[in-house]
Length: 212
Image 1 (cartoon, rainbow, N blue to C red):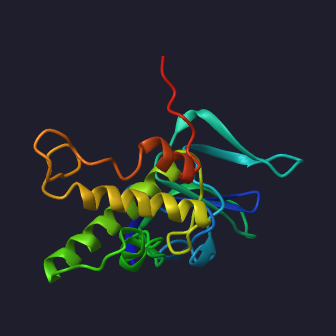
Image 2 (cartoon, helix red, strand yellow):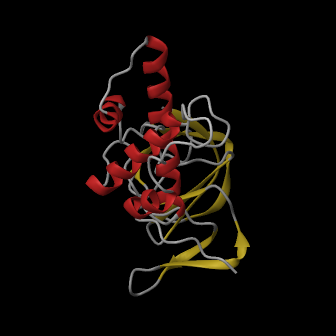
């Protein structure tokens, strides 16, 4: 659970927009709970959009309208049938509680052990497997979020994405104790990579990086 400070509020055309003091990782479709704001705004709401401009209303087609000359960061928009409220400061401040898990849980240690074909030999080994899995989960979720996907932190989108996460975890695990490559017992060569970043990105559904 995470709690954020609400500094501003507004309602227009049955749409409410609140602004928080801090940046959040809240995504579209997740639930938030507001308190300390206007009585009509307090309560549980489902996020419809994370806008960065000043909200000006809804057109005949139901599309949200914004003034792209006025920038407001840390905004959260949701549907709310209530009387209009001009944008105003929340006095003194309100609170926004986000109960959605804040860490990605797509893969776990058994997934990594299945790929490697071995279990952790020691408690320290198992601990590093956990670290590798957690890092892979976080990295893959962020990469898909940056690519425009709106994923659940708990439910993995599909088997392909899960495979990409496991490959990433295996890559991190195999690099244990190495500076910039995979460990090897050979004097002159290194072992074959577990997976390429191209394969991992392909499984995650991420497009090829754009270059100038």
